Amino acid sequence: MWTTVLAIATSVISAMLVFILQSVIRENARLKKERDENRAIRHKAMENGVVCILRKLLMDEHELWVGKGYITSHALESGLLMYKAYKDLGGNGMIDHMEDEIQSLPIKD
Image (spheres, rainbow, N blue to C red):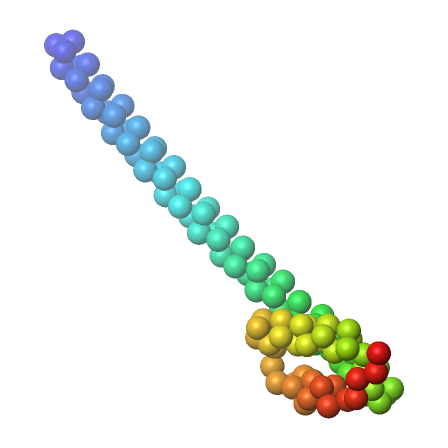
């Protein structure tokens, strides 16, 4: 009799533990997926923010140097690096014509 009760109790406890373990595993997977989705959203937002900042800097540089009618070699190199980063991050063609104008300026150091 006690053997039967013990066997049943062991089975019930084992089933409960398996259920709890499966629940914990499912919840951990859900939390990981949510964390990864949030991380991806934040990453894209930071990427978009950097593109906006680079666009603004490139526009300001364009206005400055086209206004002067020349550019320094250091400013040209810096601008080209910013432009490459802007394009690599998915920046659109809005800046392309400005970059062409800057590259056509005479260099004065």
